Image (cartoon, rainbow, N blue to C red):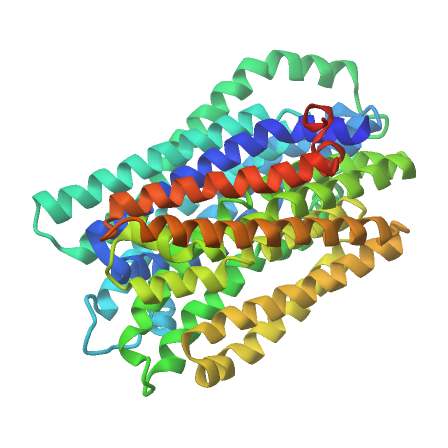
Length: 533
């Protein structure tokens, strides 16, 4: 019952996050056709530092605010949470302004960290500075939007966050494609200008998302104020004490939320420098684009469920933890692990097996070997990212933020220490191996801390994982055999015929995996009664 309730609370966010990820990926196909892999690399030169500064400026506030609100609502105190929300809007406006100034004024310093000139360059140092400054404007609006989302999530209302995410992404993508097409196909064909306008889409999308959130908030404001008036604070807290508690939640959340952006930043600022003077120097920028601009967006699509679970888990587990309902807590943790592994493992294997037809069907033959190999090697990252996200959220919900931060610091130090060396030893793909090492150690620490502090027994999860891996491996073999057999029927594979092979192969994989899962009763136990025979 508890697990079912958790999944019901996650469904809307999962659908919205998946939709948002799909939209965020689909635009990459025409965008890459317009600007190429080097254009993607230039885009990431702006977007990666933006992601880090955005996380720092929001200070983990969305999830921290939802945890704070959920806690005080459970204590029957609606007034305290609402006071913090009103004050927090101004606080987030200030942090957003400071982050904007840091990024805008510090653009030359940020550009110098990643840009390494080479003979095959399609952009210059000044172009990188321009792109960084264009994306920095989004920092003026996104942090304010973050606290509104967090406040409404504390009421267990996920629809406003879900709808605003989708609207924000749609507006952003439409602007990116319209601006890029206008510059590249109608205008001067200036690649840096097209990419600069594309990064400015983050600000335009933020306006759309904020407008959507404000619509939901003002629609529900009378109900919220009525609850605030009928559930006053038993003891009025000072704003400094409230902020102290919020920040105690938020800072660890901020650090944990930086995991993926930090790892990407290490790659962005290491790859070109490490590969200069090697046999891979000429394709360094293309690899940055393939890894951070293409493959990364693809592996984030199956992670949509983990992202949604991460948002809903913190207030849900906090409530169970505060109420000392250990049975409910164990149920949430068990269900979370099962669902993430059930979806993530076969998705990773499928993406790895179908990497080459996927890349060719979507992006054509340009840089095919580099792009397909990058995607194939990087596909398992979706499992690492997903498990890390949900285990970190479980620890945060249990007030074990310090442990979540420790796992991030250890993993990040390993990534920092090994990436340059691995790039020299193994070429471009060394960056991928160090991502697995860093996240793998971080996950191992999170799993240990959950077992220790929640007294969680992993025996059941271990058995389920073995079964899922077996079924996913069988699925992978079936997909590989079918895809290669079907491709052999075509005398010459075009992007269209490859896309047909890809879709049919995915369908075969789904049928094989779910047949095994349903026949073994695994699907019914993990996903619910509707998947039972």
